[in-house]
Image 1 (cartoon, helix red, strand yellow):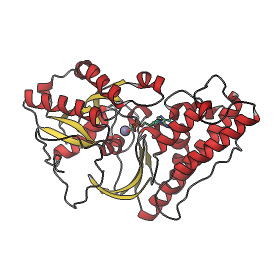
Image 2 (spheres, protein in one colour):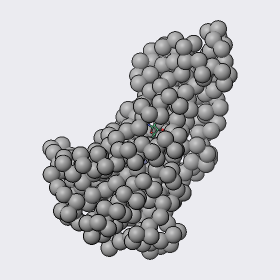
Image 3 (cartoon, protein in one colour):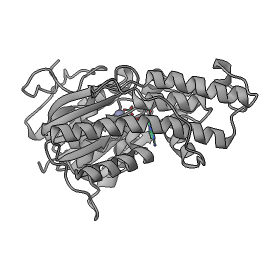
Image 4 (cartoon, helix red, strand yellow):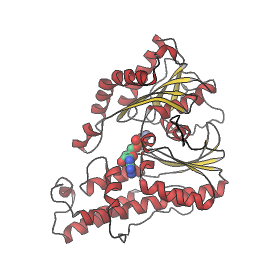
Length: 369
Ligand code: KG4
Ligand code: ZN
């Protein structure tokens, strides 16, 4: 587990390349974010994202190598995200990584993006104050723009899916409600910031508990948010309905926006935290891991930390920049797959809908379908 891994992530709208040692120590982690590029359209245009990856991937590699003080010839393997994600975006990173591996005669390791979000919990920056390593069995909540699920890990690379969203991902709901409130893209960080200044905490949004399952649902909450926001807009004499979304100038007051942002966030966080803690309790978890872009959310981090503490189970949450998409998390997961002897060949293809938990009991080869 001491391998030096060069890792490439391009599944969505961040071009990330990192150099990671031993699956834990970050030597460099460079991310070129396309957030500003997608802000005018209020969402990701896949074609635009793929072209931006092409534009940035070489400079990002150069910077990652320079920051780490290594050459491609020094690394033990090249790890790359091959799914899930946007096909065009995945193909850029995948072909780039294959070319590097082939040119420098290095092994290639395929990594599942979701596994990367999980393994971010093992990363540290080599400095003081780094947290403890997660202990098995553990329960992990992964919440991102495309995925929301709870998984149990009894050992490295061994997953049992406990539950997942039956409709929208939590991040998707944040982005949608952010748009409804006229907040800038992406909605997650904007809602989090808006909610911080809420003076009143009595805006109530529904919670979808889905019985005692570990599944999640956010589409009803989105509809409820639309209705509540429309009511608040009508009461303030502002236009409502789809036209209102396109008129950010006629926004609700900062105080009203803050209160609604808080209420929506409270509902999402309440369900996520309650189910995660129950899963940890019922499975006898020895640690809880939180990951994915929404794990950058301050309220989610604080509430889960409080409840995990009350349960007496350590919570491991990467710092916010390691929760959102980055190359280092792919290096962390790639190191584990590399140590397990997994090697992909140049036929490794992009898998836009790759699931985390593979159906077979034995770990599949990275290139297997
Ligand atoms: O993991 P990620 O970077 O990309 C995907 O794999 O989807 O997650 C992006 C998602 C977006 O929906 C974004 O709004 C959300 O994470 N997000 C947040 C915060 N920061 C990012 N959601 C809530 N609070 C935040 N602070
Ligand atoms: Zn992600």
